[in-house]
Length: 198
Length: 100
Image (tube, rainbow over all chains, first blue to last red; front, side):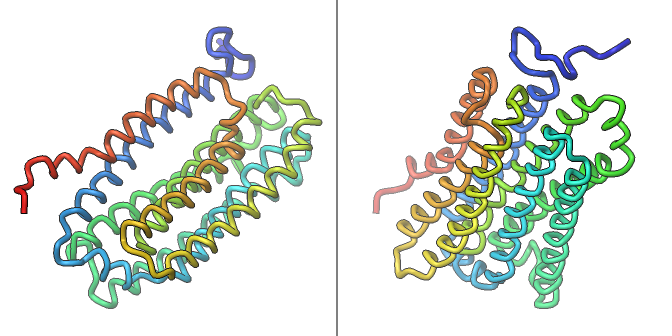
């Protein structure tokens, strides 16, 4: 039996089901990160010893700035992959989606160097409340990047068969993974200043 | 956005490139602003304003929220209300602070 509303829009919601589904998921993600951002505010308010100010000075701002630009670029390549599909240009779609995967990999490699530099200096999550929330927030964000990479790889290689059998459904799938990816970028846009610059 | 025509999408590409350039410039501005000699409150306020502008660009254009259906906007409006509540929740601790 065919699953309804994969492509055609439902009359009551005005969209295909997966789109409403991903937005509801993203709403729950906003609350997940929101809870941790709230914890950051709480810990910062109670920081009478100044561990937040001294902690953020231990972090590598140029590397994080570079990573911010990498993630922004990956958001652009992500949306361009959807645009390419809409225009029926499969070659460009693969190029853009592949670039997104590559940029995500670059982000993780940079983060790996950042983490190992901290560990070499004996800085761990139990070093201070600042580093506790730093590792929690950036760690959770990295897990989201990894999850996104798995899904993007699936759509680039094994899952791309659908491009020929159900092109419109496949385009919708790329739109939903794109929404997730832009959300991950959005979270980093707020993480970057609160952890590295303040 | 899924119902947009090919012509609309071709026009959107220019907007996406413009948003990308704006995001890159604003990233540099955020870093530059952190070197200004501001108080911690002002620095936090400025950083959040720049981050919010960047966030609006990503959500509005890349995630198509500027042209999205009311159902999604309503869900996100409710989420945003709870998010803001959560952000200000820690300030309740000030209520029982002894006056110094």
